Length: 116
Image (cartoon, rainbow, N blue to C red; front, side):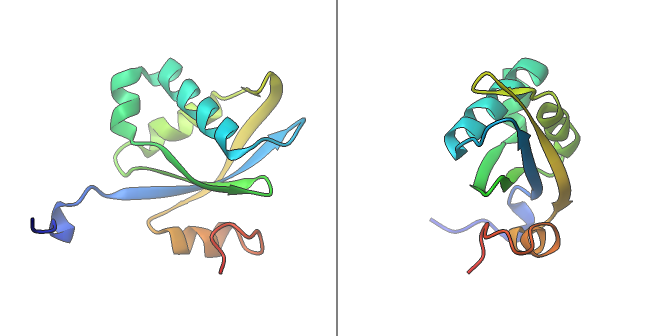
């Protein structure tokens, strides 16, 4: 099977974020709550269109991947997140980038997320 041309692939954006919470949380907790928040705010169909994925999370900071046409909806669903494991928490978006490398360099310097 042939690979898709770059012009035909789904374009993505990467949101660098930091977790502000009463207690530390794991990556699996973040994934569960982000998807729950997106589903309750946007509905299942739009959440599926957003194609939200948590790529990395370490030391309270991480990167979320989403569709380039649904960045506003993804940011709104992250802003709607208020609790993780029953403790007050919020995700603060540090910035949006077109590549993981640039998001890491620009917003997550010295954090260890995706650093080699």
